[in-house]
Length: 335
Image (cartoon, helix red, strand yellow):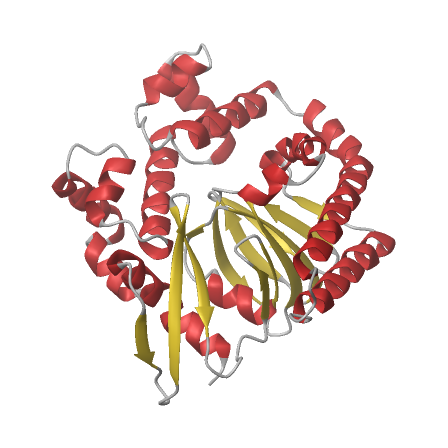
């Protein structure tokens, strides 16, 4: 039985049910193969460990719940629908093209482009060409905070909220591919006594290589920022404030106050720059967050309503159905 089928059709749904029940379950696959799924709850996000009887997990290599390396098939399956994870994800497009969103902002993938999604950002794949091929690293937030000297690396990640994509030089691409291949080889050597320690050391080196890449590309991004108009600057500051506060604040006045503007002025600028009103941005991000939590967390609907600061589950349900055409329960069942 292919791993892709397990992840795409049932992985998240099964994991969520197991997390809610907090017990092991033996499940039967569509083609009769038995496998056992054991899930752990990390932070507020459901982090899953799936163990298949016959060693079928060939596309994803993992160390504990901290480091995972995977390929094209796995990412297309894992990010099926809006997904919010407590991990840093680094991807490099090798072949083909693709379109994806990070917290409502759309980006295009092409060969040589590296993309980095930060912990708690909502990632949604839009489409991939038939020849799309890429490699990916995923690192837990906990690991990022504990690696030696990693604080020097994390300080550069603030760039990634505005500039998550980097068009790498051929030499930079080779560096990323070499680390991916070498780390993955070490991950597969499960009998090695110091396997985890070796991989942790290699990942630390990889992140310092990322620092070099950031340093090479940041000046061009900084120049782009300086050339932005006043209205574009206001919109970006609004977007940053929105990403920070949309779970609890849904009024135009709140965001206008944050920027020392009138609601009318902010609304006009946002509409002119983005083509959408402030209210539309707020509603779209709230719905995206709700979809991500329904799709990739173990939280029940009441907990999601509380997280998004709705007065009660009924009001959240009506709000969600107004924008999606289905109830939260119906949406979760459809995934």
